[in-house]
Length: 518
Image (cartoon, rainbow, N blue to C red; front, side, top):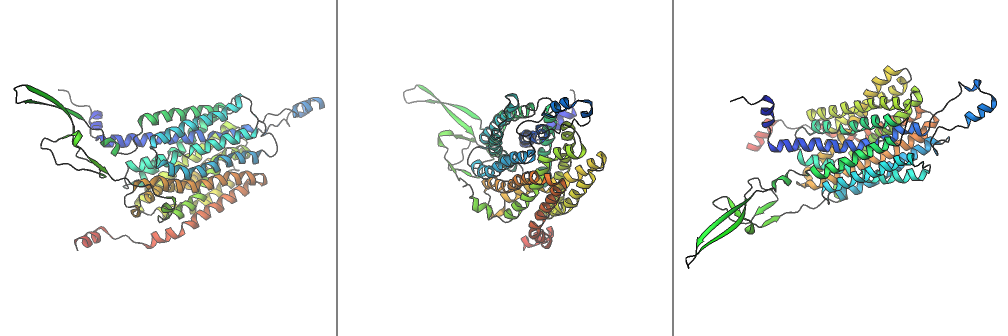
């Protein structure tokens, strides 16, 4: 008999639950990657909506009449062809992010009361529609500013369906062991989505920028169908798939006739849901008649908004994320335009270069997760990275003018230090607080806690690009001063939790065992 191939041996060594856990990890990763993929194109297309067309090198070759003709040519997309284009682009960012911040609080509450699979599917289909609608403005030659504002507001609202849902789902499947590492790797979907969004949008930005939105829009809509077909919200959902067995009973009645009766039974599940109790005696053959089963289920009530705020640490981490996300989203929406203006690159090359910030973000998210797992101090890990982020931002603003090589290095370093705390707070910290011991096992609070933390952070995400749009006309240095001030505020807001972590010493394992025995 031939030996079993080593690959098959490895595959068969995993249990069914491990396979489902890995599948859920990959699926939710891809789902939220598509959310960020559809969110990124606007930052790439900005430099195309307002082009810096310069014909100064050719003016000497034309007569005065030809000069008048050339100067009247506009290569920007109305209404972004005017001198206030930065304020208009900032208003578009603000409309999306303000709607996102408001909708996030509502999505967490709604998401706890609806099946996650349906909620996510609806959100992804709607987001795909509005993303495509923005791109159709190019093909239908729409130049009404309020059309783009309304599309951004609607898209911001439906995009909020994603984060509370996927964090709740991944929190249901993975426990607290190595949560920082697992969620650090998982949270790289944000940066992967940004990178893919940049590359896809950059491919069409100079030729047909409408496709920069339509292709990501179709992608997230297709992923919504995949979500509906395959997403398993909770491991307990698999336990209700029971095998049905038919048992045929033959009996002679008093008149000598033979009667045959077929009953349907279900196999007893040894791994019962802890929230259910079967109020029947055990059967000797291990089979329980279906019509005799009575299930009493204890429904866990969804936590209130005020109740979630009372969980220790929720307010501090929420306000810290407000400033951390302000910095991250300012880079997300304005970095390609900054590179275009300072390095004098075209929109495609600037978009490609901006992906290095997200590469650093992937490294920072994983690094923050690993360190926080090792030292068991989430707030301190975030604080140290925020402390290093402020000088790195100043260094980036200075070095980016020296050439491409130093810019690449500082982009990766800044992305690591800026996105590390942001990634840790929105994943492992949110999951920790959503399963806090004060909740007494009520896992339904996770969605609300996640929405409060990320919703508060989204207020900063809305303010950052808006402030960048207002400050950039006075000089990019002022934008970086604003970002450094925001980083400092985020650090100060964590100071109480950092002090508590540093002054609290955990008892050693031997001491705990001795106390239990005593």
